[in-house]
Amino acid sequence: MPVPLDHEFGRAVARAADRQAAPLAACPLADGPDVEPVGVTHRVLARRVKTLIAAYRSPDSVLHGSGWAVAAAKTHLRALRAVQTATGLFAGGDNVQSPPDSAFTVNDVCDAHVLAAGAGPGLRDVTDALAEIAGAATESLLTGGVHTPNHRWELSAALARLHRSFPDGRLLDRVEEWLAEGVDIDAEGLYSERSAVYASHVTNPSLLLLADVLGRADLQDAVERNLATTLDLIRPDGTVETLHSRRQDQKHPFPLAPYLPHYRLLAIRTGRGDFARAALLAAADGIDDSDLLAQTLLTPDLCRTLPAPVTETLPRDRYLTTARLARHASATAHTVVYGGSDVPEHRRIRSGLACNPTFLRLFAGDAVLDAVRLSRGFFDLGPFRAADMRQLADNRYRLTQALTAAYYQPLAKNERRDDGVYRLVDDGRFSASMAFPDRPRDEVSHTTRVEVDLRDDGADLRIDISGPSVPWSLELTFRPGGEPQGAIPLGDGRWCLTTEPMTYRVGDDEIRVEAAVETGEPLAGPDRIDVLRYDPGQDHTVVGGTDATTGNRVYLGGHGPQTLTLTLRATSQA
Image (cartoon, rainbow, N blue to C red; front, side, top):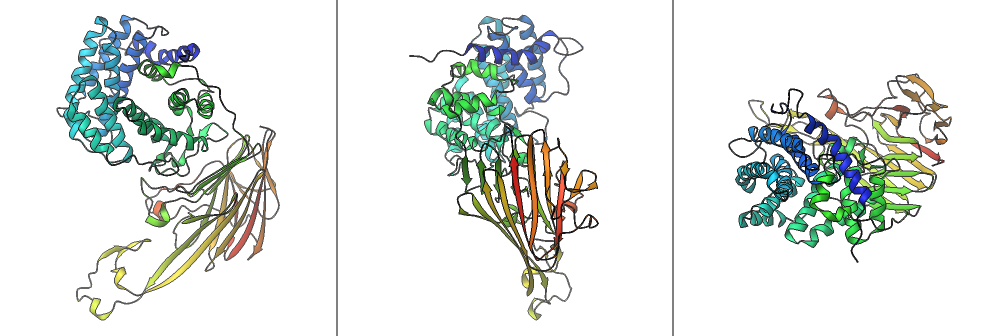
């Protein structure tokens, strides 16, 4: 029997579309419906057209059959055509003459074309305008290149959509050329960028479209694998873990809501109750995605009734070996340990690398320890980022980073130059005209080991700092909402913790922290503000930047070598 429709979901997505489309239809611009939109990006223009046409087509929309919706769509189409260059690509944005950036717009143009073409004579002018825009872009997208992994799939999806409406074998050949590289998904179900933003907004929707147009079940299977892994990355606050990301979302929380159509579609197609649970969670705060209406019209399966959701069984553990990220979730605490930074290998901070130095976070209901970070004053090489993470036992892990810096000896006689001009070389710490690789080195080493034992009620940490005597500072950043009790205020949202326990309470939820020194000097007191601080390292400070956190920050500090234990205990009424 066919799965019945979920009419309430259909009405909810129509309301979300109307919240954007109705004001545009009533008055596309403040100066009137005949004035072109100014200062609106090509991607926004195309998405607005798509939403207006979807509202026109949907019986659940207040704009169903509305001439005002058609007029607004035409206004935005004129503006969109005006920013299309002679190459067919669109002007504007950071990336100049960008095929992938234009592909985002063409994807919406092609979807809008399908919706408009199915609406009959009332949208004939709109259909023709969309076809003109798509046709002008085709050659540049057919031959254009990319510069990020997810661009391949966005561009391929645009080519497949173009073929869907305007069949051309060359388009499919080009798609197959991109797909022949293989989808960049690892054994754990993570795409190479490890980014929630790009998985939800680009890769997953593109692969699902390609799966449908090309009849490639393997592409849908890849999306299912990614969504299955993402289940274990959903945090108690309804966001998706991003510590391990290699893109800009590694520093910011990311909501689950953009995953809604993918969890919903695959829950319906596969019958997976865990995906149904995730789809309901993604919509828990309401539906506010104006594009969902168009998606339901283009993919009617989305409006089918979800299978029965399956409740998550706790405690639940997951260790993603490829990203070196572990999670332990219980009814009391949700704890994440991370040791997968790319910085130790590449020895630089760079867009496209996983750079976040946070190695632990803990949720106890509304009391949240957002970040635990460790600074060391070793040649200004920045905070602890594990180069290795080992699972020692169930829920027990060791993170390790060994740093080296060198002092360089004189050049051998046969390496010397009479003019005193030597190669400008980066030694991983700084650059100089010193021909570093040609010189004997005297190395100084520093090693940090952090052992973490994840418990149902928190975590136990043992931090061992070895090597020369250098200052260190452990920073615990708590999400605003409470105030540390038992720690010594330093001002400006900062506190000092020594060996007395402290608690961080928000409502009935609490995180208790207690530190003890096993070896080495006593912990630094509140008078040592020179030690009790976070140091982002020279890669940031040399350009006047920082990756410091904000919130309520509690510091422990001292001088190594030192061994420290830290206990984190959660009490939650959630």
